Length: 475
Ligand SMILES: [Fe+2]
Ligand SMILES: [Fe+2]
Image 1 (cartoon, protein in one colour):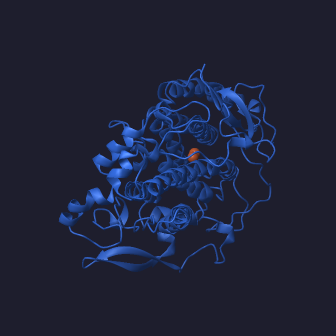
Image 2 (cartoon, protein in one colour):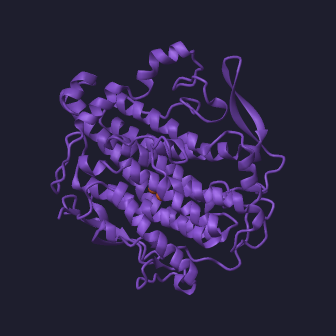
Image 3 (tube, rainbow, N blue to C red):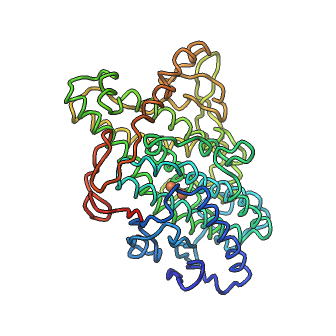
């Protein structure tokens, strides 16, 4: 099962050639995928040869093989982690039953919706990032961007396979629609808000890959325990790739900070004007970018109380993060969880049935995970001898989904008036001036071993290669 067949048009480890109808349907979708890639994939990259990792099998030796390839010839394909015949459902009303190899009729609509929503984020992020190659701060960073782009393309393949294989005609229609929606398109936007935002500069890209790809990690982890076994095995393999995306974000922001604190030490100042004159990104601007990307991303987990979340869990479609490590009954009936709401102009906690609060549970796990990396960024500032600290804003800040939508809350968690919000918005979120300044720093710097002035080089290169390795050949 884990050997990948490369003699076929579509690389796969799912014995695709044994199902001619499915194979033909996917071979019909494949040219549309390539057209989509040519149309809205990484701009100007068609002839580049990029040092990419490619999966040749899903086992530890095979999933990260490195070589120089043209991205268009990347081995997009269908890879599922090996299954175990006797896996049992680990949570919800079907706990203890055998996992499903096919979609039960009663859960079909919900499963399709889950798969389509996940699938839609994958091409969306490629579209959001398509111009970034033109302003890469180094060849090393350019390679990392492209690595992420091809893998998000493959994640789309993963979801399209499930739609084609398990959902008949409406699955095929959904697969086509995944190539038709466009990030930010007014008439046919991507499904989720954060995936219609622009990723206009590399600071946004690093924040996106730190925060928003981490949302992906939590969603995929929750689906990797699904009772629908093909979904569980697909998302397990996707998770191995997601780790690199978050590494790019965390190390990217960390390198920006390193460069900034070095300039603060050289110039003996934290004056924003002087630091900007020196061409580095001041820490208050970084904080506002964190505030924006964090708040937009935690909205992705959905409403704090949701009957859909309860249904998805109880019917075995979507677990909690690390379900297996939890010590409760994995059914959750009669348990409670705290969510926030506004009462009398103040945020207060309220106990609600846990099943209805599972979006909030996943969001809180995400928050814990996000904060850990922000603390590592603070270590860089501390080591350079400065007292300034970065933080994530209060989880009620700048929210647009659930009970907190429309409530104005400051980053430190005070409910504020519309007037106070308006007076401070430019201190709390990136201002047009911040964005223009960051944009002014973006210029293409892609000679091997050279780095733009606003970012420090990484500690080491990719796959133990030197930092100045020729990661991209511009043909
Ligand atoms: Fe992805
Ligand atoms: Fe990702």
